[in-house]
Image (tube, rainbow over all chains, first blue to last red; front, side, top):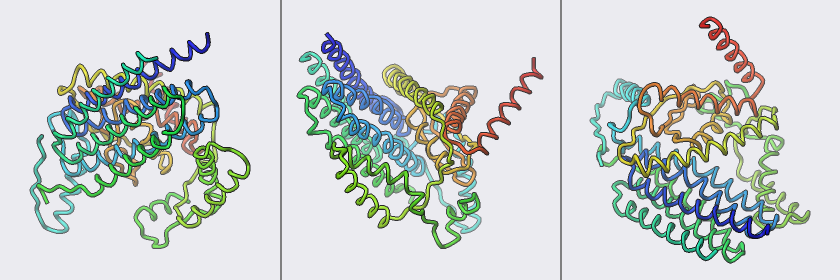
Length: 133
Length: 87
Length: 204
């Protein structure tokens, strides 16, 4: 009896986990620019991997694997935001963004101020264009 | 459980196909990097499902490794990506 | 390490970088031993001692700047934070899935600046991490000197939603401060609560 219930729970977790991966794939295709695609890449995956690892833990029915499962998820929690931040920052700095998808951009003023300061100090004017893909 | 396996297999296949489309289309290297990241996560998801089905933990180390490889890869690429059009 | 030293370190003016003492590395050592045990799936004493030896060598060879802990940790608040975090992760995932499937190319977003209360590196990093894992937002840029985070927020349609996103970031920071912030940060929180309740009193 308990076995069947646990099997059903694990099965549901696995299906939801793979559906979240599918959603990440759809998001990668459908979102308009790099910065919003990054959301699709990082967010559903955290929960997706959690559900899949939980299903694994349930099916194995042993407490010995729990530390390494927690570690696998913890590692994901630690690394996913860092890589998202690095890619997002590089994307913003190299202007891989569509301005029309942004309602507000409070970083633009800061960047403009820094550029103006650099221009005053080094006296060279650079024209930069945005990437439009 | 076989039905569950079929559903998961098909969903993950579609997901990886969609990600491959993004990988091919680009348009910039950063998009390709995040597409690779998602692909690695789909692969580690598939490894998890395989382990659940056959009830072993042999591939768990590959799940950890896929996570680390994706991390190092995307951080390295975004560290060295340059604004070629404006340089 | 004072705030002054932290600034100096950030600007690399002092020349001599600050390095952690062994006592400050203790949490890191503990974590490394746990990782070692988990990797071998073997928590016997011999294995853990060997792991500790390797951890000591690693800590000695690859020296790092110290992480300053506040010395305060509230377990109940940690449970509150953990459950709120899991709830947020689930809601965020559902939201992003919905947006990806039904909104797609029409999704609007915003880049907003949020100035945090705390000036400790650890807390700012923690807030950034939690933010990136939770509802449609991630950190694009960090200003360490004023501990300001620049976030990319998904699905923002107007100014009121920008303010809502900012308030939710402050909420996450509040939960974290209650969990592991210093007493000074707690005092800032208390003052804020007092001020806002006074304001409410005036309005009503």
